[in-house]
Length: 240
Image 1 (cartoon, rainbow, N blue to C red):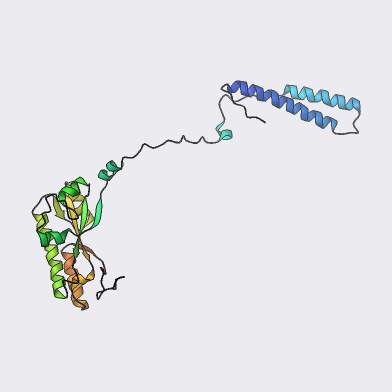
Image 2: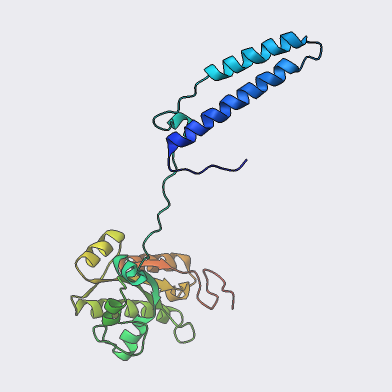
C-alpha cells in the first residue's frame, strides 16, 4: 500500500472513511458467504444487511490530531553554531603544569616581565597565549647537586621565583585554588610551585627528608614527583 501525502487533512480523512466503509462491507460479504451450507435466500438477506450496516457507519476525523494516538512529537534537531576555539580558550581558566623557568631566573638572570624568544615562558607570552596559571618546576640536576647541596639548590630556586614575582604586580605565587582564582580575577598570572623529583630532598634519612618536605610545602610547593630520570631514596625511575 502506497503512503498518502496531502496538505488537506479533511480530504485525507474523507478518503479514509470511504475506504473503511468498503472494507467493512467486503468483510461482511465474506462472512455471509463463508458458510457453504447457507441457503441462497439467506445469503441474499445477509448481503442486504451487510450493505445496510456498512452504509450506516460514519467515521469522523478529529479536528486536531489526538496526542494519545500520535505520541509526543520529537524536537527538531538544531545544529549548534561553530565554536571559535580561540575564544573558548581565552574564556577558560587555563593552567599548565610544567615550566623550567626557575632555572633561567636563578642562573641566567632571566627577567620574567620581558618578552623573550627563548625559554619556556615569560609574563608577556603568558598573556598573549591566554595562560592564566603555571606550575614552576623546582628541578635539581642530580649530576650537579647531591646530598645537602641538592636541597640548598631547591631552596635557591624557590627563592628566585619569589624574587621574580615580588618585583612585578603582574604575577603572584599562589598556594591554593582560591588564591589562584582571585589572582586571575585581578588580571594577574598565578604561579605555583612543584618539586620535580625527590632527589631535591638531598638525603636518605627519613626524618630529615620529611622535615625538608614540610619546609618546601610551607614555601608553596604543591606537588613533588617521586622521581625524575634517576633513582633516589624515595623511588626508582624507569631509566635508573
